[in-house]
Structures are given as structure tokens and as C-alpha cells.
Figure 1 (cartoon, one colour):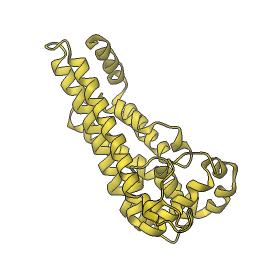
Figure 2: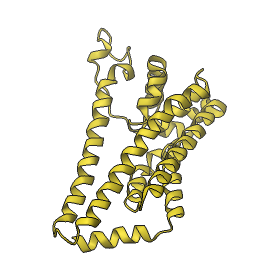
Figure 3: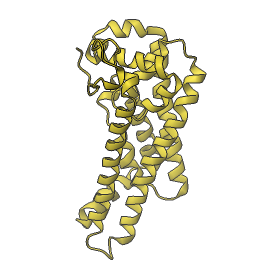
Length: 234
């Protein structure tokens, strides 16, 4: 186990640090872009890149690049919405996303404003759909950026810190503990499970702001069930 993991980590670390960091930035940029974000595993790319971090310079460089990549991707989404929003929504791409998801994003922004921009960074589907939807709204770009930047920073610090810390501790203990590899895998798995639980809790907490008031006549928004977000339409 230790030998296999060391080989994997050394392979990742053998990639030029600048190239490795740029790949992570591009990955997260695509992950936050419209539709592409539904299929590009930007979080996995960042997590893998973080396991190769060697020193404070690479650590902060990776975080900065990931944040910039996320902001570029979300800015692209914002301006796509501002310039071509209705056309995208009526297009094949918009149909694949699903009218239900478009309406959900619209309701969320109308009801929560900037807070919706912040929280959506941690929610499935909405993290790539909200920037486009905000672009179609009256919200200004500066306000959008002011809400999405802190969320991107928190996200980047969480993923890079966990990945680099887990890999660093494994390298230090791999020669002393034959089960060090299991500890490394356990840390990553626990982190991903916590991320999944956090997303589900956020979705549940924000359910009433996402729900359709007219979905069930005579039923209050708090009692409506929220369908799991997905790329298919109604």
C-alpha cells in the first residue's frame, strides 16, 4: 500500500510545479463554467495537485491560482449570462440543464441575493449555473464578485490544505508505519464525506429558498421537498 501510494505521489510531484499549478487553475476554471462544470471534476484535480505541494511557496501559489481560476470561470459565466443569457437558456445547452434548474437558480437569487452567490459555490449544479443566472439579473458584477470571492478562497484553502497535509504526513510516516497509506486514504475519504454531508446540509437548510411556492397548492415552502439537482429537464 505504502509503495503504491508513494509511486503515485512521486508521479504527481514529478510534474513541473508551474504546469501542475496551472492545470489545477484551468481545471477549477472549467469546473465553474456553464455546463462544463457538470462534467469536469475540478475539485478532484485540485485535490490531486495539492498532494504534490512542497513548501509554503507552492502551497500559497496553488491556492492563489485556484482562486483566480474559479473567479475567471465564474466571471465568464456571469458575462455569458449578461450578453447571451436568454439565448443560452433557450438553446440545446439550456435544455440539457433543464428548465427546473434554471427556475431554481432564479428563485434562489431573487430570494437570497448575494448570499445565494456565496452559498451556491458549495452546492452541486448551482455552482456552475448561478453565475450565468446572476448575469441575467440586475445584480452588478462588483457585487457578484464581492460575494463569490470569499467563497472561492474558503473552498481553495480547504481542498489544498487537506490534500497537502495528508500527503505530507504520509511521506513523513511511510517508512515508520506500514499502515500509513491507510491513514492517508482515510483522511481523504473522511474529508470527501464531510464535504458531501456539508452539501446535503446546505441544500436542506436552503430548501425553502429554492422551492417553488406554487409547486403544491396550499403547502408552505418549508414543507416542500427539494428534488436533487440534476442536468435533465422536467
